[in-house]
Image 1 (cartoon, one colour):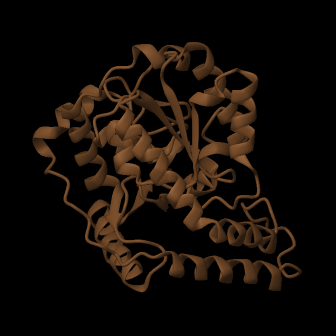
Image 2: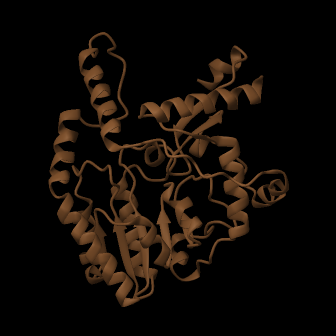
Length: 315
């Protein structure tokens, strides 16, 4: 895309889910995530703080899973209906829609059980005072995993984190793995992680949850391991030590651990909150649009914000 656009003198702007959640989406020139042109120099953001206003809180867009789900169903239906007319089109999703919906339905039937389990684990963590590290999973088909990380799937990331935790984390610490709320459940990450922990003789120190109140889990965590999830930014907001194993816009000295994962468990330090605020303010004002891709109100907000941003940049 970029070589073609350059040949015709066109600028490329890319939309994506928000770096900041909720109520925001991303609009960046050239690319997003691992292809973002945002600087990775912490001093640059500190220098910008004097001329960058504080980031505003996003207005609620009315986002809900029903609207998101209806968009997904229409997308899947269009793929099926027009498959013969567009034989070279390939979805980013690796599996048939009906197969994935079956997995989501099975997971939904266990939702109440998952919430009870997550509440029990959270109470245990809060009441016991034991140190724990949080590892939130991402979606297996996400380009953040496939394109912008050293892993080819989520199981490979689990393997790396579990192996490192078993060998180098404090012997009294717990590892809490939280599944992604939109995971289809087709791949049994719980069983995979528990099998690894059993082989490495620390099964009693692993907690795997399918749900849970993320701010509470972040607020008390000894550290947070992500591939490149936006949960990393949320963890920085809570002042938690973070390591990003893949390419992430916030992975820089002063915000995240820049050493090896094996050293993170003992050596990680708190983020520089002044740098975090400088980074957040710049990112919100220059890459984020208040809105969403799924609800009527969110789309209207996003359209107005995108037009304003593009006119200001290129008017």
